[in-house]
Length: 103
Image 1 (cartoon, rainbow, N blue to C red):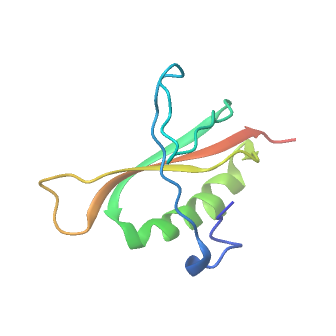
Image 2: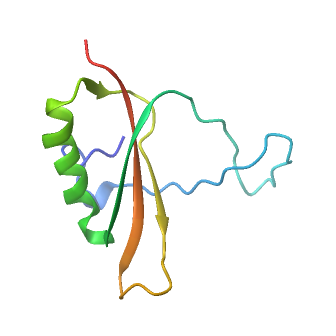
Image 3: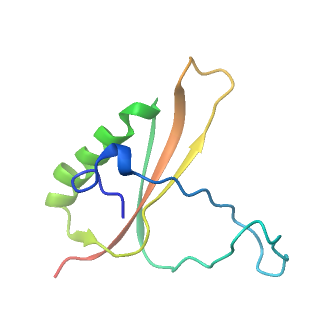
C-alpha cells in the first residue's frame, strides 16, 4: 500500500473505483473486483489535494498511535468530490482506512 511513511510521493499510484451492482456486465477495458469487507475508519476533510499526505501522516502518527486499533492489510481508499463553489484546488476528501482491533 502507498503509506506516506514508507512510499515516496512520486511512487504513489492512483486507482480509480466505481461502486456498481454485481449483476452489471463489465466492459473489457475495465477490470472488476470485489473489495474485502471489514471495518474502516473514515476521515472527512476539505483541503487542497497536495495536503493529503500531511493529513494521512497526522492520522497514522497521531490518531492511530493512541487508538485501540491497528492497520489492516486491506486497501486504503480515498474518495474525492470536486465542489463547484469551492475556491481553486480545494476538494472534499474522505479517507477510508482499514482497521482491526489492536492485539
